[in-house]
Image (tube, rainbow, N blue to C red):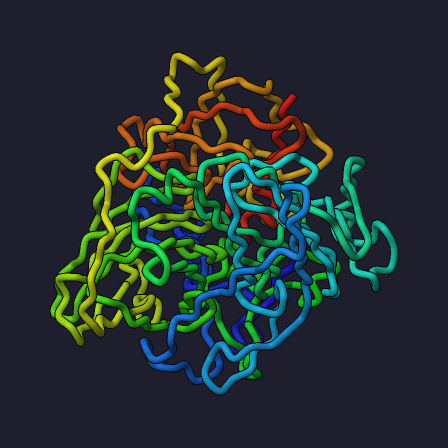
Length: 538
């Protein structure tokens, strides 16, 4: 990649030591100092990526109310199928008080509208693309047929797109995908939703341009419910809150700053040199609002937490103004309820991970505040949001000792094979890239073929932070670094956070549907720069 520069900084062409370190974690340390891999990785830096600085005045924290994304209504419920329509279009919103910010949106809002559905009741979502570039929609965590999974070359082309292939699916790298399915203007996505109740999210997944599209606003929530979960007595209604955390930076004109090589997102993918390891913002948004505050009863609340950031990791803590920590009682993971609750005081959260958590405000004095802070942040990125306890209230909710009894019970002896994959920096088409098993993504190449129904163990090895996501299936964490899983690894997951120099073993059964799927790093800049691989289920 040619060397580009942050125009605001006026830095010299040669990269400074600070810029190289900004590439992120062990990669930067190795490049800058010549440290051995083991020495660099042993430092385990808390972030991978470089931070943009906003060029507009930022509001103080805990002034803006927490928005709750609207729940989308189906346009039809005929034949036992709920049919939704979503238009992808440009819009503007007042994210920072008094400042209008242009966005790419689902239905004109950021985040997009939430879809709520019932387990086993299929839905169809018709997406209409009125944006200036192609898009693909992935329901992250969905057990979805391959033709609706949002494969990165299965694109919805805008009506203005010049032809069926130009820049649409990897042509800029000389790659062609003979299996790509392109549609013009609209596409129907079918989701059977035959899966455990949980919170998923949908986002753009266009090849090479996922990161800037999500950054510009193309993300929304999808919650699946069922009768068994409804009967547990968990906090519900206004005491169940979606919490989608994302970092952004703002340019001088109020727009979202992002270091794309090609700001039109039409031809050349990638980001400018200092941000190759990931793009971090200096403003923490929750449900699209900066450092918001939410008024709560002195009662239990269920927080459905998503890290919707491109590259930023969090370590969340709920703390009162007098320094007392509140328990974060985890009841669910990416793929639904745990078997039994797990109590944390610090909760690590990598990009694309979701945690279902109960926080009890009943012991907090009325008028007091509870801050949610990020122990990996500094300055403005240390604060996330706040809750203000404003009233006493009755609370008949509970946290059952047994939450679910339908988790799979895979054992290592069930596996028909063990595979190993390395997630490391490398060269892609003569430029910097991020590779799986030494190879950059090629949609026309078959990387892994598994048989429907097979159980496998995968060993994943990282150089720097890599949140690894498998499409279609959930998995259980068997080990980290040869040791037992960590407390936050409980339950069924679809994304695992690998720390610098770490290895982990996961186990899963490849069931559901045949077809072509993916596994990849969910640091969005990494996946755009090659860190994806094909998974063929036969």
